Image (cartoon, rainbow, N blue to C red):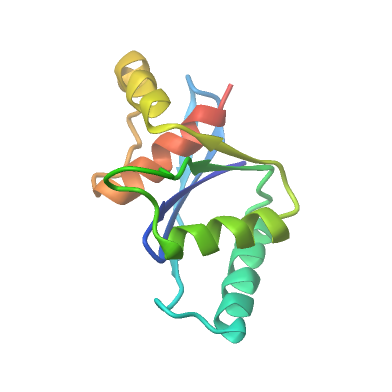
Length: 136
């Protein structure tokens, strides 16, 4: 099971996929977003960690794929994504990899005919694309 986590501001959108690129299924869950306040406390981060780890355990997540955060220029990742990225790197117990937005665009062109289960909302669609990248 692969989880795609799309970081945006102080939120993480989550989509999990099971299977292969040719034949996969979207794992529907009521939890598709985890957020932290703009000025998080240690308690807020602890709750975020517990929620993310529980999600990974409940769905037997084997790998997490996250969008690579821009570090400079317009649209560079802010403090929220920086905090979330660091926390995830520190606490997740499965392999975590980063994918550049250009890779997602190229993959979307190449494999758009295989992405039949892609959610229609933009952020969940990006999380789906991230998970799709790790499918074989």
